Image (cartoon, rainbow, N blue to C red; front, side, top):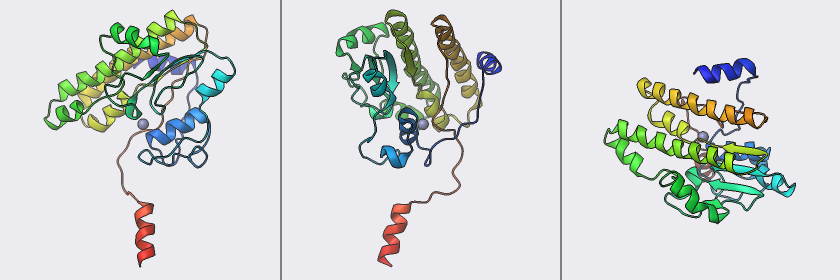
Length: 236
Ligand SMILES: [Zn+2]
């Protein structure tokens, strides 16, 4: 990834320290609120509940800072902020139409990319289960490419002080393609180009440029379900 390497060389990098537990929803909310899971109220990806502290988008909006937020994967429906907010990813229902605020932008975005994809539907799982890896990979890239195109379009058309883009397909990639290096290689080639686009955008707007992640990937050695353990312990 030559572009990413150059950015690291000319910038700074640090090892990621995720939240505990390091599941997507929990970690992203920590990143966007600056609080730990005990404070923001979402202790796990699959646990329901209400976020108890405001995200940075609300705080910035309250201070009249203009933001463009594309594919916020933990906020749905989108907030009415000073700027533009597009919800997406696992918290946004596939094929929904109310993922953008202001709502008036929906048609514009949708026709720009010939059908915006707010989140992936079950067809990707069907492809993977049927061994159609090439098709599934295409779907992942298409999902990300539409986010990229939309973000660059909005960034060039509207005023902003901060813009945030989340690419969720990097996560899917490691769930489904971790053992297929040929796909990983192709994906990272694409991603390196994408990062270069956003880096250039930041240079032309004279802003800081941050690349962050919610967690890494690895195999699971042990899974401890504390709720089950407590239930069984009580009934002993
Ligand atoms: Zn994640």
